[in-house]
Amino acid sequence: MQILSLSILRLLLSVNGTDLSNITCVAAKPCTCFFGIRMEYDVYCRFLNLTEVPEFLTAYVNYSDVGISLKANLLTTVHNGTFSGLSFPDDAEISIDLSYNNIETLETDAFAGIAKYVTDIDFYFNKISVFPTALSGMVNLQALYLSFNPLKTLDPLAFQAFGQSLTYLTFDMGHFQSWPSELSYLKVLRTFDLFSLPFEDIPLRSFHSFKETLLGFAIFGTNLTTFPKEVCSLHILGSFTIFDSPKFAFGTDEPLCPNIMRHLKDLDFENNILNKIPDIFKTFPAAVDLGLANNSIHEIDGSAFVGAKRLESLNLNSNFLQEIPTAVTTLPALKQLFLSNNSVAAIDKTIMQNLTNVQSLYLNMNEISKIADDTFPLSTHLYWLDLSSNNLTLLPVSIMNLKNLTRLNLYENPIECSCDAMTKLKSWDTSHMMLEGVCSDGKTEIQDYIQKYLPKC
Image 1: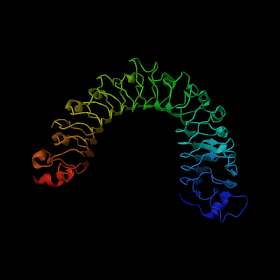
Image 2: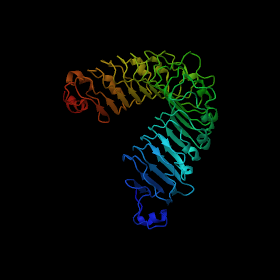
Image 3: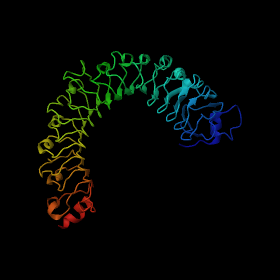
Image 4: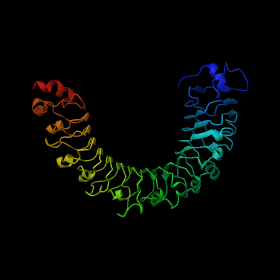
């Protein structure tokens, strides 16, 4: 960030009418301040092992974009009047970062004087158990980060105060005894990231106040046992995640929602214990991205993806699949297929002939030892193929059919680089691609052998 000259600084910052020639920052040392050419003013008091918030001068800061970072210190309390000497223009927006401290207490008037300017405040990784009433003056707050705190309750006054402005919220619910009714004050929430949900379901009407505004909802670590029907009330939801939920299952084969969720494009059910894929595309026909990695899926029914006409990315990494599922051939828009870290032993040529639109295919960390010479059909779409960490010794002749391949990863395969093993590949031009991997001798790069030594055979 470019630093303003002191002469310009005098016009933008005044402190009790005193000479500014020796004043460079409104926060006491060891904090530092930076003044940007685009009306930015940043106060850095981070990573300093501070046990108290440094003193802030009485000052009018004539900047519209202000950042105050007290990240990664040893703070336990933010006292009344900490920032009360500061004043700003009416259009100022302040971002405060108090993450990675040991804060347990924020006194009632901790943000007196600046509360109405605060639009973004971060309390990640602290020790806050009682929601701070100090936030009740933040009537323009847009983003509130409270995850990784042992919160037990929310504050109704604070949620009423920023209910018409808050668009992003994240917090832990692991210590809550019931669903917090204070969320009903939020009228314009667009993104909600929830951690450690202790309940087996989400009560009906929990999202009533923001069901017409919420675009993204993610739950990380839950006791959910089935798909929460309340999600079906979120009419314009575009992305939904259930992550790390050891009890979660889709339950019956009935539709997940009584209504069609036409706006939902990104679905992520990674890191659960799912053993099957339900018929989810009747409910989510517009899905573009589906994440099912780190589950317990052993096989996939051939009709699992019927109706998924728009699905472009499918992540099945880290499951227990022994073959490339035939069901993927029913996905006409599929561009990315992730099958890393499964137990795939072979690549079926019939399946490959029906994946001609796929651009990226990840088959690394499987058990593939041989690929038939006619496996890969002529394709101008596939540009990224990852076969690393398998047990391949030979490359199929049909690898040359992948005309637009720009990256081929063969690391951790005992590829035999010899005239006998590669004679059919002599006409293979690899100059336009990044071919990664080392021959079985442990020294020669595969691409070097193909380009320099194979032509001499």
